[in-house]
Length: 274
Ligand SMILES: Nc1ncnc2c1ncn2[C@@H]1O[C@H](COP(=O)(O)OP(=O)(O)OP(=O)(O)O)[C@@H](O)[C@H]1O
Ligand SMILES: [Mg+2]
Image (cartoon, rainbow, N blue to C red; front, side):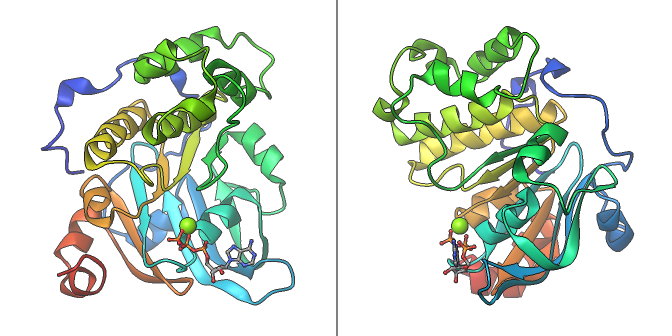
């Protein structure tokens, strides 16, 4: 993982936001034995083929995976199927082929709600907050499946995103783009997920806010929550990626560590502007 540009002491050392149970047993970040490593990943959408309703297949044998301690990044052109891949992993698509496994368990048949109960947190690309509700109500909604005390988690989310604490009584729709994305990520963290999926968390924000959000995402990943995210800012995202996927027309076009993809001639020429 390329952490040079990030200070090591910025991580949130409080690991209690994670659910330590049910983690995978694979050691993160290895590139050797990639095939078997991927197969056993903590979260994997394995050889997924499928589309929307009765429509044509959008995904073709597409595989995406992530392990604890890792940030996995999906990049690719508009319409490549990045969001569709995320939705497939979250159970919003009927797969015609392939499987989704979480911590060794086949969850292909589970509804999105049941996947949340199993520990998946998902922040979709659009409509990811309740704009007429306050920031705090959004966070409370995020915790809807929990029956225990959510105050500690809320305090941790406010530690991670101090601006949300300041604006907790304000309607989320009144926040800036970057602040809204913090609400969306915070809302997903309220379930204490075992894995966090983010579809374009930095969409529409300035480069400075993007760097900020990436820093926070790195912090979350350091608490032990694996992160699977789609990013439009390919170069910057691959710099923080332990695992990178370039999707083209619903297929895996290139796979490797973020570093490997950044160094790959073909990836650079076709997807990173040289
Ligand atoms: N709800 C839907 N119903 C039918 N087709 C859809 C739906 N959502 C997306 N598609 C189609 O699936 C293909 C992939 O779209 P998808 O949103 O997954 O791409 P993407 O890689 O996330 O693109 P972007 O970078 O623009 O977010 C497109 O051809 C799109 O038209
Ligand atoms: Mg998308």
